[in-house]
Length: 181
Image (cartoon, rainbow, N blue to C red):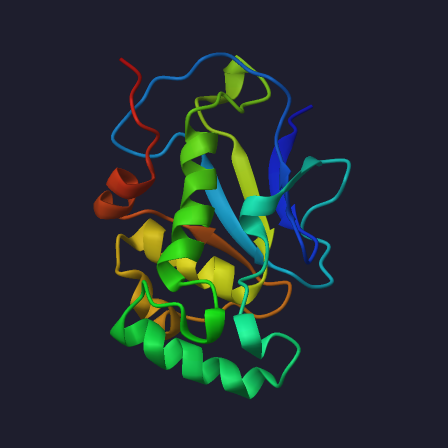
């Protein structure tokens, strides 16, 4: 049976769910695998029978520095600064660029691996990335090849919403695993 990968999250770390080992895959002008974002929440989209969970820190929730534990309304202050300078770390918060680099780095790592459960189903595996809203919004900018600072202008993921992340050509260039020489 086909088993796929789900990368997911507990608050401090994420999870990845990867199918059983498969054959090698050719690099193309697209990403090797199909990616879906699933916002943390009660969901029946990914059962343990279909997916293999793999915890990963790369999908942890964005750190909001001095605003951690306070009202969520204060996050607007950080997001306003993100739009102006995505590399800024206001209130000692993790920068938008830093979160995108962390989550996009995970995709680059996955792209360098053969994840398909067998060689019969083509070159791709289904990978479900489970995290909190901000980390997934920032990852969406990487798939779109957009600046990290625009993440709050993208369609928001609702709790337990499953959304396919389809890369643009610029997103493929940003997320593709570096070719080994």
